[in-house]
Image (tube, rainbow, N blue to C red; front, side, top):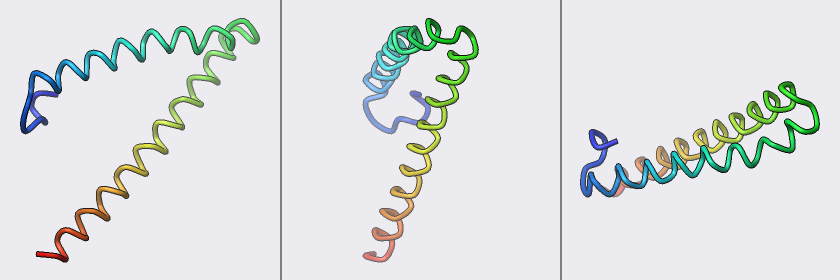
Length: 76
């Protein structure tokens, strides 16, 4: 994280750790109903669902960044 941050490297690392542990905590809470309903199969399916949402968010952010970079390079 600190290698990619250009400014406020300590804050970037801190935010990364906060979201890492928050995600781990919420993951257990989120996956429990799937465990109760269908055991390991439910947990695996719910994990794939979350992974799919994350991939879609990443694709959207990459496209958005590409558009912003194209617009900023056109203005120069």
